[in-house]
Length: 101
Image (tube, rainbow, N blue to C red; front, side, top):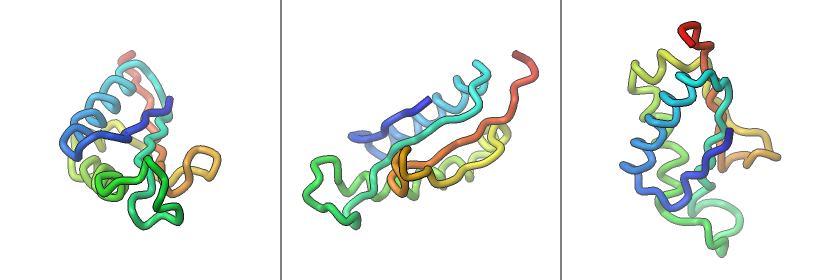
């Protein structure tokens, strides 16, 4: 399951990621692809998807997750995405198995 945070403010993105992780865990989904974009420091600064917020989201959304024990209790691993899934402009969240499902 892939989710694009383009156009979200930091608060909106954090709220959405909270919902997404919780809902995915409850529904037994094991892997999420979160697309944040590469931000202003990417090679293609004329890209219409590039914004200040995206540069912020790339770092702040994983930090938000790591700082919330409730979210981390549902997660096995967070890591950068492969090139075909967005590379440095995206990351994976691998969720634990929900045995209550």
